[in-house]
Image 1 (spheres, rainbow, N blue to C red):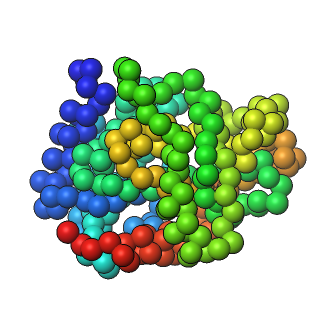
Image 2: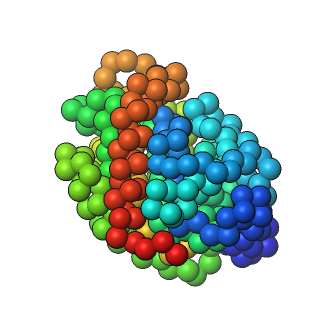
Length: 274
């Protein structure tokens, strides 16, 4: 790619999606993490699906539990959602531009709101597997940024308070926490989890933070929601595995999908369809 911060590639991908789906503009983007696959079936009518590997700049999903497709969904309000079921993780070694290509494509497609979901570990003993947590803030422990050049982007209200308030109007009992993104793909050691906890992290995982930064750079509002799939290393005596993550996501799928559908519906209650 040329030094355009990935915008040219994102514009090409957005145009390809518009051509294939017949939808010239999407209003909201939804990235589905581990445990969240299938949510698109509850938020509206899926009118088009594209295998991610066919869209410029995207790759087929390399992680079990991710759907591997990009979908255009017609919401009951008449708005359009772009659902990204394929996520590139930093640990795949494709570079940070590939990691954030999805959210940049969504911005190029017209989306003003970006919802990022993930499955993660919890450093809070009371947050057991199956708990949904709103991300209030994050710690980017990858040592990289998706922003290139002297583009100084304010992240003070990165996970927009307005969208979190809407989520609380759907479920007042939703907890909020700080998410720490580690590089992965290995799980964190107990010492690293203790470090993250001392730094203020309630949740640990391998995605989301870099995407959120790129989304804010692109001018989108961001809502982050984590599904606790396990207690982080050292919080419980159990060993960690991706199978455990998938099982927790499957057990919570119906409940968290309904929660997300209700939040999206509430977001667009007062926004007229263009």
